[in-house]
View (cartoon, rainbow, N blue to C red):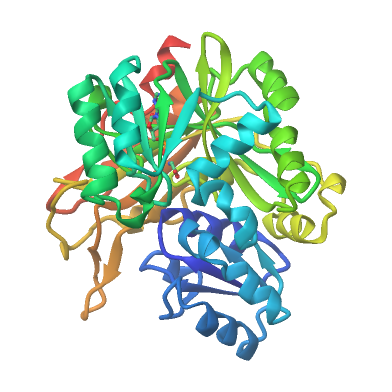
Length: 424
Ligand code: AMP
Ligand code: GLY
């Protein structure tokens, strides 16, 4: 069968690597893809938001199945366009992708159906938000309502910071139209866990847990990023936590979406915080995490196409998800200066050292092919180096050893990815 993947980051590279393992797949296309994905798929120069062109490509090339990796096209309704054209596609429709696309929607859903989350208020007028903040407890969290590349969240320690935040989000529109509405949320503390799931409208199946490291610098210092590294499984995601989430969060979310007439098919990513009062939902995403996919998918034993087709066909109850009894760690190699400004176009050396090494992966995120065919840096997050190990300690050792195989002039990484597991 022929498969098209929409997206071009590290997550899509991990998806492509899983798809490439399927014995059912003979050809993979990726739009737009990147230099690493180009080694296992044919990259197609169509942007992820060019829905009509992508659907036309799928038809002309007799693509049997399309996988949407990214949030923006999902929120924009790419699945609806593909379905209208009679194409088989994996991901939530527009009316369900709102689970990630609007924080106000997801918070109201959780309140209505009793799904544990931080207490909150929503505002569409900055004056009301400012008045509310005067009496609110600090620290407090401000969230722009819409998609903001994972950056629309401000954690404010003082009233002055919170007032500045309202101005940035609602008046200066720092995150664009995402700031027309704003959620103001209680600040929670605890360990964060990322839980990915497959959903077919009714049934939900949970993947092995993971944890992301969002801050740029060691010790969780520095600015928020798209993610500097991950590990899977999370030792903090205990049997008790799992049982609680199964009883109060996962199935309830799927059922709530169905009850709202927004049948959900695809991936739901639960961003959880393990608070003293129990696990609570920080956020939902309508896609695999990046770089969570880079540690979870390599450990999945199932044929990913079988699972994704079951989501589309509503037969996920017939599938049993299985994971290797091991661990994986992903260390992101970034351009020094990320997430602010950084140089691009620098030659990347050493990737050939991954060839033929089982359990080691070099996922491309921000890379490009230069005119002379060399692979060069082309983004803030450049590569995700993943390694497996018998346990998290061994996986971490292996991943950091593999980061040494790669060189580029402004290579930057955190040195404490997975270090928290020492406290587990
Ligand atoms: P989000 O995009 O909603 O996941 O937020 C990004 C990050 O901000 C989360 O991963 C948390 O680290 C932090 N965050 C979001 N909401 C809260 C909250 N209510 N309390 C504490 N931290 C939060
Ligand atoms: N790594 C967090 C995310 O994908 O949103």
